[in-house]
Image 1: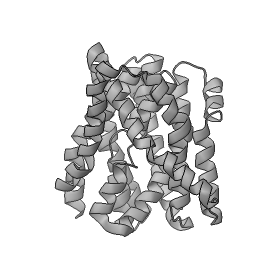
Image 2: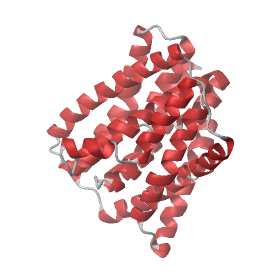
Image 3: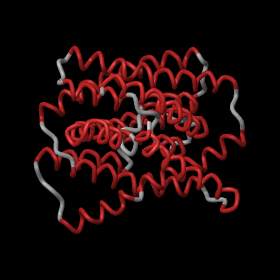
Image 4: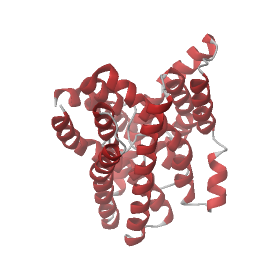
Length: 302
């Protein structure tokens, strides 16, 4: 529990500072969000990809587990969204809150502390695949709430994070690295991504609690909790067992799949005008509850 507090508490502190400062500073959340979305987040994804050490077999196994888990959650999420009669923007917010997990700034440290360097290597592969899903399906779903499918699909190929993900993956698989000045520049930009994401989260949380939460959204939040923190790791664990993953790889993939809703969802929701307050609340609540659920998974594996 001490490890988890050391990992999660800084997340809450940064978001909390932004939330406390927002009434006085009155930051424009859309401007801050766009800076993260178009500058810092693409750099973070590219930097993570070119620094990772991927092997074809390990990458393939982990990718299959994550992609199938995502498809299962997507199908369940669509059915639940219909049952809850969610409007377009809220449906988009609900789906990205369910599908996109915090495999980076939360999942990577947890995997390192729990499973060591070998676990971190596998967690990095998982994060790589999740970044590609965020850059494609995540953007598509976030944009689809206020636009048709064709328009939403075009938005996927109109944002830099998509090209950063595929370019970084291509260089990694080819064993190439960017020139050192470019690599250092990208690394510096990427380091700004997480603090800015958390700043946006803090601002969105202020707006969320000011506006209040409708009963329907509270029920949807419960569905996010169940799918994100319970169903996702169970599906990943089952798939890992069926596919014959090594014990370490299966454990890492399961724990990564049990991560809470990704902070970057607040950026996507704000940029594409989904229900950003609902997403911010999903990030907050799933992160708090994940203190317990992640501890239970780690207690089982360790």
